[in-house]
Image (cartoon, rainbow, N blue to C red):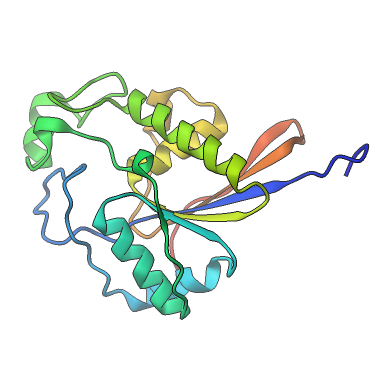
Length: 205
């Protein structure tokens, strides 16, 4: 506390959903596919690492909701997550459902930050909407813990936002299934920064 001002810390606990089932190396993007929640040890480890009193949020896609339910089952809790449409995975348009190897053959990689798949969105657009959701929820739940079960592109965007990175640079982060990324936001700048990365892409055990 300085000069009567309370310093709040809002902590985001980002988890990438469990692996998609039988996607055969295909790019699923916003396709609503199921995920494999059979790794009980991983879910138990996540459950023990997460705060007990937290706001939970997922994207609209069932692989994030299934992952959140599996973590809560391991923890013996039942908190209804908020559904945040802005935290949905990148829309790869006509590329969704195609095999990654075929896309890479024609595009060198899935997409750069500026490249918009036919009928989809580019990573710059993902960064912008994720920033909107983070800033709104960090304001609405100031001083709370927020457990967010989301997607690789969304978590890369969250790290890029926190570090004020260019979109192309944020794409370089590796975000594995069931990994934990923790980002803190301060109402006052902490050691010259308004954010702090506590961990990134941490395995569940």
